[in-house]
Image (cartoon, rainbow, N blue to C red; front, side, top):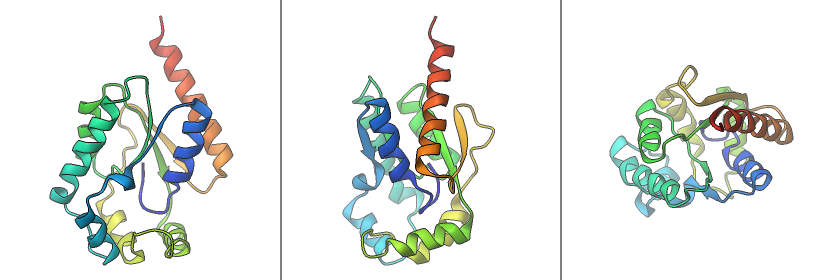
Length: 164
């Protein structure tokens, strides 16, 4: 989880492959209207995200064996919705500064619907999950392989804690 440009999709794919779990790309489940708003540089509202969060929660429930979900989950309320849908869900928080996020979003402008003008709104909306249960804070500027190793080690440790 994290703001646009932090590396959610790249890390999610790497972790899903390493853990042999299905990948749920959150961006694929936005409504056409929400995608168009973001393409036009209009920030989504809580109401816009309502159906999206419900769909993501259902997708998590549809994978009781586990899955990797890439999702901004910027507000605590959004994370709590996902927690309510899937007990034991964990969040790998890719922390990045505004400048680097802007550069990354600008670099993919021709391949992604998200407008570069929305990066500031992402940071304005972000409620840091640091301190919440089941959250791993990551430096989004580290190499993907390093981040993948950190997440996989964290998941393995969490699994050992819950296995009798």
